[in-house]
Image 1 (cartoon, protein in one colour):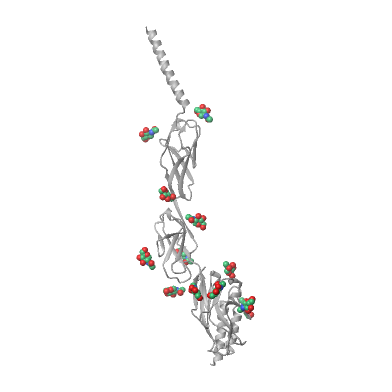
Image 2 (cartoon, rainbow, N blue to C red; image 1 turned 45 degrees about the vertical axis):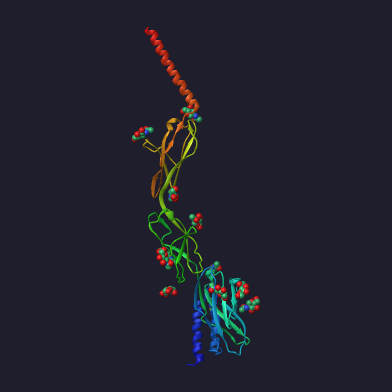
Length: 354
Ligand SMILES: *[C@@H]1O[C@H](CO)[C@@H](O)[C@H](O)[C@H]1NC(C)=O
Ligand SMILES: *[C@@H]1O[C@H](CO)[C@@H](O)[C@H](O)[C@H]1NC(C)=O
Ligand SMILES: *[C@@H]1O[C@H](CO)[C@@H](O)[C@H](O)[C@H]1NC(C)=O
Ligand SMILES: *[C@@H]1O[C@H](CO)[C@@H](O)[C@H](O)[C@H]1NC(C)=O
Ligand SMILES: *[C@@H]1O[C@H](CO)[C@@H](O)[C@H](O)[C@H]1NC(C)=O
Ligand SMILES: *[C@@H]1O[C@H](CO)[C@@H](O)[C@H](O)[C@H]1NC(C)=O
Ligand SMILES: *[C@@H]1O[C@H](CO)[C@@H](O)[C@H](O)[C@H]1NC(C)=O
Ligand SMILES: *[C@@H]1O[C@H](CO)[C@@H](O)[C@H](O)[C@H]1NC(C)=O
Ligand SMILES: *[C@@H]1O[C@H](CO)[C@@H](O)[C@H](O)[C@H]1NC(C)=O
Ligand SMILES: *[C@@H]1O[C@H](CO)[C@@H](O)[C@H](O)[C@H]1NC(C)=O
Ligand SMILES: *[C@@H]1O[C@H](CO)[C@@H](O)[C@H](O)[C@H]1NC(C)=O
Ligand SMILES: *[C@@H]1O[C@H](CO)[C@@H](O)[C@H](O)[C@H]1NC(C)=O
């Protein structure tokens, strides 16, 4: 089999590969076909070539990546233009510098003769593509680009939870995942605060305190952080307490509101009020108001908070209704009156007896 024939076969295969790879309206097949034709014409020989330093790279969203290559050509030619591309529309290969999808994010550099490095900053998931290096020479037939190019996969880190909603006492496993093959310990954050763990995160049993937003970082991999993932913990009422609206003394005739507070998820849907030594509930609702309070309302109160996962009573709150001055006055008058009446009766009795 001749050199040309085998090149034709290779070219045909390249077209097939390119058709398979063609994506999102980017028609690479035509340009690959041109390369195949060039190969078939025998223009391209062992004197021409592009060698990429790596054939595939996985990089994290937001990071910077370098793709490098070296290239060769017969010494009778002079290179006039070098660039990288991912898209082409026959007969144009679009340099990444001219590609609006990459504006301000690419740079070409060359630190050695016949080498080139493409730097893409602030990587996006959509930058995932095959990147080819192309060079043109002073002679029209002396154009070349190197297959198979570099396959770049851009991926984000992600927190994968075995469950995003869990009832207290259950368990949750969190992994920091990407489609890249990342190696390195994982650093975890809860509500942006570092948690000491370098592997998967196991919460078992889950407590209500574990609820929050989790994110992760793979150490040594550009230290880029995943988006936050929220863990919701469902639990019955906790820390049920009663607060009293008036801070000072409660006097007869005034109004008082007792408020029941409790942490719960989902929130408390039922509040019940009790008075000590009164067997049946006295009220329901988060607030219990007593207007025109009397001394009979004095006593110890508590509330019960309830949701789907349980119920909890608050501790007792003592409501002490003080008498007002007029009440004291009335009492004193009543006492004096009684004493006087008793005295008068006694005197009358004594006189009558006599
Ligand atoms: C790509 O271009 C080739 C040649 O012009 C054409 O036959 C093919 O249909 C195009 N493919 C797509 C997906 O546009
Ligand atoms: C990319 O290459 C430049 C120099 O060409 C270097 O300064 C930079 O650190 C490299 N970046 C990465 C992510 O390798
Ligand atoms: C990039 O654009 C410039 C001017 O807009 C043009 O001269 C150059 O040929 C283009 N390069 C490529 C490779 O498309
Ligand atoms: C491209 O790289 C060169 C040298 O490495 C630097 O001077 C230039 O500022 C860079 N351009 C951009 C847009 O980063
Ligand atoms: C990524 O590409 C898809 C499909 O081509 C497009 O719908 C989407 O808007 C792009 N996203 C960004 C951020 O450019
Ligand atoms: C995340 O974890 C769940 C449960 O462990 C699993 O079913 C799912 O496939 C994982 N998702 C990814 C993208 O790995
Ligand atoms: C990821 O790396 C492991 C070991 O380093 C290797 O066995 C595995 O094949 C790699 N997976 C991929 C998809 O590259
Ligand atoms: C992970 O942490 C444990 C102790 O917290 C330590 O023994 C282990 O060496 C660490 N592993 C890595 C890969 O850092
Ligand atoms: C978690 O994130 C959500 C939305 O992203 C936000 O509303 C909530 O306040 C965050 N929680 C904490 C504890 O930071
Ligand atoms: C209950 O109160 C304690 C002590 O004040 C506090 O540490 C804890 O976070 C509270 N529980 C909930 C679920 O808010
Ligand atoms: C409430 O009942 C207890 C015994 O059940 C009793 O000792 C206490 O005196 C009662 N208090 C009032 C104010 O009736
Ligand atoms: C409060 O109660 C007393 C005694 O029951 C009554 O005389 C008075 O009118 C009440 N005041 C109001 C504002 O309801």
